[in-house]
Length: 88
Image (cartoon, rainbow, N blue to C red):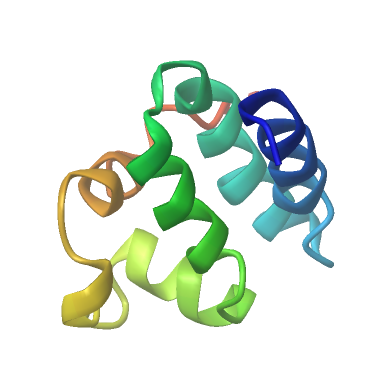
């Protein structure tokens, strides 16, 4: 599958997680960062999409320890949460 098709598929999966909160966290992360990802980073995100939303959210907001396989630059960027718009 070519890069554009992978990213299009991932964008859909990122924004259709099942809850509004997960959509904002995962979809927002995708929209903010995917354009600069290399093939390895795309692969990381594809694998992350197989995890449960509750786990991804817990790792991102720091309520659960991040498993070793998910630790690194990408998870660090997700944990910063500066990509989620907050309306007042």
